[in-house]
Length: 147
Length: 291
Image (cartoon, rainbow over all chains, first blue to last red; front, top):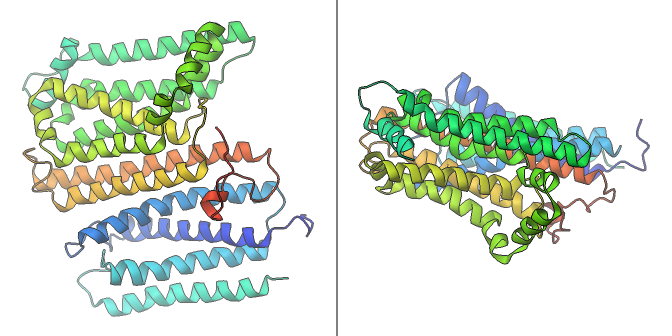
């Protein structure tokens, strides 16, 4: 059992937020792009700049996931992992990414939509609602994990 | 040289004769020289140091040699006239093969297996300004990913399809630039004045982003790119997706190699913030973990 003086709450929170971002990005890629094939690899309405920023985000997500896992192992090794801060961070990362993906990637950059040949409104509401819910639970947990 | 050129010409011209014995000469030569040289080195290392050379490093190097030999063999050459086979060949030669070789730490093996005179000579080369500039992550990324932009966006691709020697040079470039890049990001070999974690992570992300962008660009303009290649749209779309996801796999492996090395080094540093990630995450200057 880690003693409270070795716990590093801020670091536990942001390291797990990195893992949350990376996990949600992986779920998005594996479930929605590959298994369901709802999302398209490339959408004809995507502009050049959007493609570039998509490449940058995609590359960053992969490195964020790997970095997060090794930083997490490092926290465990140092007995510095604060469990409640870690859960808060994870949910903040999951929800934050989901909301970012739903608003910036789908709507602002118009990389691709949640699903094609259907009315996207219910899908967008479900997508962003889920993201917002995860984010809010993360915020509540983060506030309660202080002290 | 002549035989390998013939193999390359076969691969691109799509001649209707099957692969001949001579097409196997280059891959088998790569296998024999690559694996044999390294195993001799490992034996010399054990003799000189009285302890065994890492079997993980040996396994990684041998895997790299097999990957590269496979990429050059008729197994893939049959496919290489197709855009997808071509892309797989480039992924193996320029990304996965070199990474496996780099993790075999051949320079460390060389330094441990040979006389101190040779070791000093090698170290002197590693310390030169020219080597430092060439092996900087930014230089390596430009040579590696920049080379792909030049190949796929200019008539060079079509030229390599017509001229066997150009095709051969492209392969040499892919292998050399891929090795340099993997080494500059995650190489376990000694490197005086190696840039810190912040620089290496940043360059890895930017290089992978440029690679993903090129993959999507080739997909989006599958009818026009590469100029004069004559691939069908469907063929090029498949090849571009291979490029995109193959790049992801390589980026993941590179990041894992980079961060696992950091993890091992960080075990000696206990103070928070003194972990070489300061410049990356906290906006402070890098504390300069030297690999």
